[in-house]
Length: 358
Image (cartoon, rainbow, N blue to C red; front, side, top):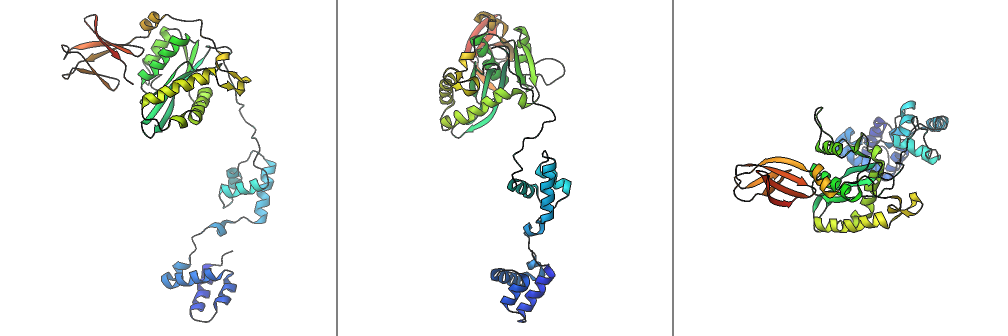
C-alpha cells in the first residue's frame, strides 16, 4: 500500500538534506529505487504537489473479507450482476473488479432466471406472415452509404425480394414490396416497424404503404421492438457477415446488386439451414395461392402524384429530378408510378415514360 503523502514528503525532504540514504528511503517507503528517484525529481520540480500519485488502483483494492462477502452474495443470489453486488455491498471498486473476482471463482456463467419468459413465434405455413425491414446503413468505401431493403417469409425464411439502395425512401420500400407481390403472391399479413415509410406519423390519415395494403387485403402488424422482427434482424446479421465482406470493395451500386442477386439465389435455393435440419429455405416455401394478375397489381398499386413542371422542364419526385418533354412548363401533370416505371400524364393521356430512379 502507498504511504500517506505527508510521510513521503518527510522522507524525500530528509533524503534531499542528506539525513537518509536512498536505500533507507526505499525501506521507509517500501518502494523501488526508481520510485524514489521519481519522487525526488517531482518534489524538486513541484514540491508537495509532485508527490501526489494520480493512480487509483491501490486506493481501491478489496480486502479478503470484502472478497468473501462478494462471493457469498453471488452464491446466495446467482442472478446478481457484478454491478448489483458492488452497489449492494457499497464497495468502492468498479464493477469490472467485482466481475474479475466472480470470474476467478467460476461464478459468472450462470443463466439468469427470466422474470418474463421469452415467447417464440413462427408462422404455421408459408405466406401466413412476411416480415419487411430496412437494414441500417453500411458504408462501402468506393460507393458510400447503402441500405438493403427486403422481405422475408416468417415460416421458411425465404426472401421473395431484396435490393440495395442509396436512400431508404418510401418508394424504394414500395418497389421491393411490389416486386415481392409480383413474384410470390399476397401474404395474409406483414410485420414491419413503425418507420415513416410504413406508418403515418400523424394521428389522422395513413401512409401509402398502409393504404395499399388495405386495397389488396393484407393485414399489417407493427413491431415496437427490434426483437419482434427477430428473423429478419438475424438475416441482416448473416448478410453482414457472409455477403458484405465479399463486395465491400465494389466500385458501383450496380456491381453490388449484381452480386446480391447471385448471393440471394444461393441463400434461397442452395444454402441449407441447420435450423431446418439441413434443408433449403425454398424447400419449406411455396408461392401464395392468393395472387393478382400483373394488370390487377398495376391497377391497385399505382402511386399517383401531382407535380408542377418547372421552368427547366423538370419535376421533383421523392428527391430526384426528372426531365419532362417540351411544352409542359408551368403545367401541373399527373405522375403515375407502377412498380419501377414512371408515367407522365396530362389531359388523360400518357405522354412520357421513364424508370423510377433509386
